Image 1: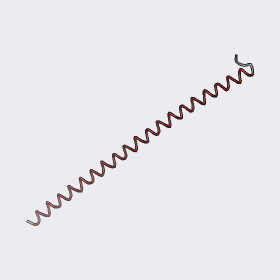
Image 2: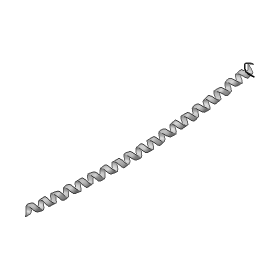
Image 3: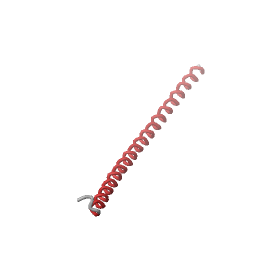
Image 4: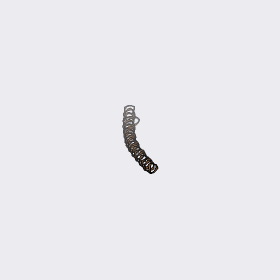
Length: 76
């Protein structure tokens, strides 16, 4: 009879341990997913800002070249 009680207790402990592992795994996965999403948003923002900077720099260079060309009579 004591053996049956110990077996039941062992199964309960194993079940509780498995639930704890599953819960911890789920929590870790949520953290990883949130970090991945935040990282992706940050990279998207970096890409957008970089592209805007490139566009602005290209426009400024074009305007500067045009100004030089007009100044030296190369462009009308």
